[in-house]
Image (cartoon, rainbow, N blue to C red; front, side):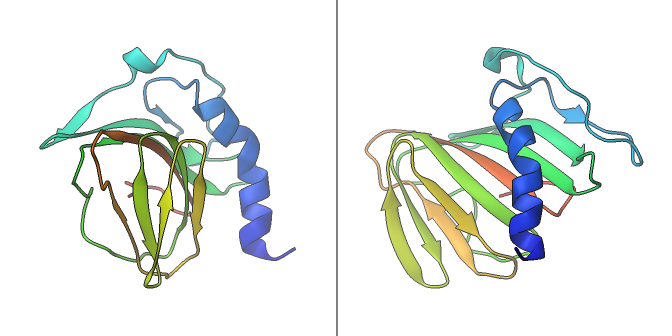
Length: 148
């Protein structure tokens, strides 16, 4: 198993716990993220036009792997930002609505329950084709900071 898949497997227990998460759990620089549980409506809310995001956690796993998780509600017809790439890897988990995910020039339409994984360095973007808002969770692996 390569390092990327190994890090994803190590992060899976944290990702499952994050779906019932607490207000932005952040670990001290040298301490792993602590266990928590908080209702969705108590997560902090950030708005960007009609789009809404909620930071869930940002810190280190027990194995020292940086992990950041957030939720986004993307308005119909919108994008969170232009296509981009970064060093960390991301996994998108769609809970409602539809999104078009473009990875390295290939676009796939996803519906509720779908997932997408973006490898380090790949150009990717997300667009909600409408007609309703789309909600998804992003799990960024290998980077402490704001995900996409």
